[in-house]
Image (cartoon, rainbow, N blue to C red):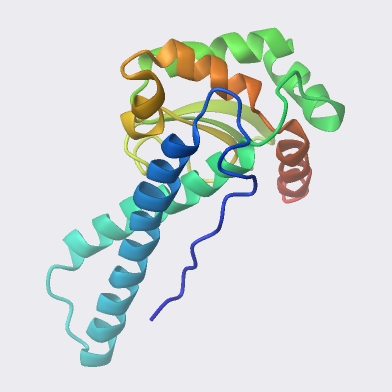
Length: 198
């Protein structure tokens, strides 16, 4: 049963500035694909349990499902975040960021403060409960998320995202990340998501 499909990178492996082809191959082709494959295996196990009407170790399986599903989804948001030329957001997203954070610079300072102290992900999310943008710190894919919020962009803080290129020097990785942000795709995603507001 293969319900969930691996999504290819939306850009070439060798197209990012400061993030190498080898780094992306390890990250996408090993780490991300493992989350997709694990999610599919869990789907198969759940399907078998439902057919039998017997649910041994359902708690552990459901915790694994949440972890792998969230890992898959956040990596896909991360890939969509990259592939651009950096700079600043424009249009409706920029207007909303100014409304909710005061200035784009304020947003970035808060985002980076989370990045330098976090250990999993920093997410810019549109929260359907208050129709506002928030920066959220998520440690383990599914720990730190807020119900009703949808990621607009993601920064992966795990070592597998930067260690091949920069070792423990996260600051250099963050610089490379911001040089490659694809604000056009992020803005398109934001506009789709914001239409879901309550």
